[in-house]
Image (cartoon, rainbow, N blue to C red; front, side, top):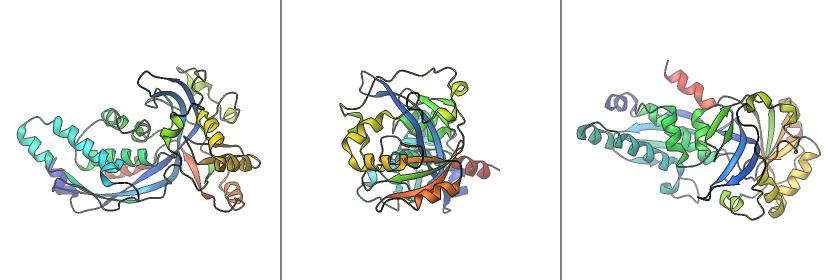
Length: 313
C-alpha cells in the first residue's frame, strides 16, 4: 500500500460520479427496524458530478470544495473515505502495517452538477465513487462485494453505484439482479424545491403494500414498452409527493402531455423518456420558467467503470 501512495501522490485523478434513475420504485413492505422493502429498476445516466482525488500520506481527508449547507464531516464523500480507511486498518495483519495504513490520506475536489434533493442519487454516487477510487489509489484490494457491504452502511443506493450495472434491486435496494433496459434519452426536470428522503419514507401517505414482482426471472419478464403502464410499474413515492408538493404535481402533469414521464426516487426530479436526443431537447426548450433541467442518455454500465479499466491498463 505504501508503494501505491508513492505512485499516485501529488497527482489528481478524475472520476465521474453519475446520476441514476429509478425507472420504477415500488414499496412492498416495511421491516421491523424501520427500513422499507423496495423493488426498483436502476439505470445510470450519462450525466455526472466530477470528483478529483490526490492521495497523500498525511493521514487527513481534505475536501477542498465544501458544499454549501453541509459540514465536511457530514458529507458522504468524507464519510466514505474514513470508512474505507478504518476498514483496511481493521484488516491489517500486523501493528506495523496498521501504523502505515493510518497515514493514508487524500485531497478531494468535486465539481457538483447533480442537484441535491432531486432523487438522482448524487450523495450515494459520490460515496461510491470515493470507495471505489480510493480502494484503487490506496491499493486496498477490497473486492466489489466488500465495498458494497461498506457502502450500504452509508446509504441504500450506494451498492448499485459500486457494482456499476443497471439492475432490478430488492431489499432496501442492495439485492441486485442485472437488467438491460433500453438506453433511451431522457429529459430530467426539477422544480425549484428539494425533497428530503426521510420526509417521504416517514409520511403516512406513502403506499407500503405494493404486490411484489417475480424476483427470480425479472430480467426475462421485463419489457420496456410496459414501463409506463402504471398497472405494472410506477413510483409509490410519487403518489405521496404529488399530494404534498404542488410544484412536482404541476410539472409532472405538464410533462405527461408531451411524453411518458415519472418521478425518480423520492423526487423532486421528473424524467421524460424519448427515443432520440433531438426530441428531448425540443421539449426542454418548452419547459416553464424556473425549471432546472438537463438531457442525458440512459446507460446500463456506469461511466466510471471505463475510467478504472483505463487506469488498470
